[in-house]
Length: 158
Image 1 (spheres, rainbow, N blue to C red):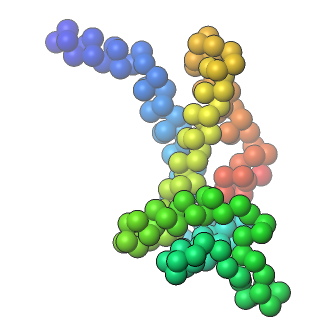
Image 2: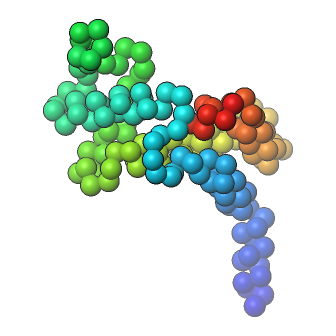
Image 3: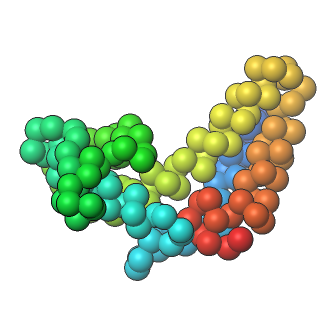
């Protein structure tokens, strides 16, 4: 019994519990990204259209092309850098198109929220030391849930 209590205590003292709490908070707040239907947000659908085009280009063997629906033929990736689209489309093609592209896209957006928290924590630990171990989580969540910025994550709540 003492072994399990010590194991639970060591688990609760670690950052794993904080990350688990952050996961449930983000799931509660941004769970709309994982639901069915249309993609929420301001320009989430145009990005998804670019992602579909990128998947089509990559499956044809090239990573750029023209969109004939814009101005009679416009270079597809002039306005947005194609790295994220190339990454998501590559995952889609690596899974042999078995998982729908929209699911991979939604999961990637959802994972980017955690990447932001991890990046902010890494920044705080690098420049301010270990004393900001848990403060960085609080500051990252405060920035993440700032009401004027909620539209950036596809909720359109601003």
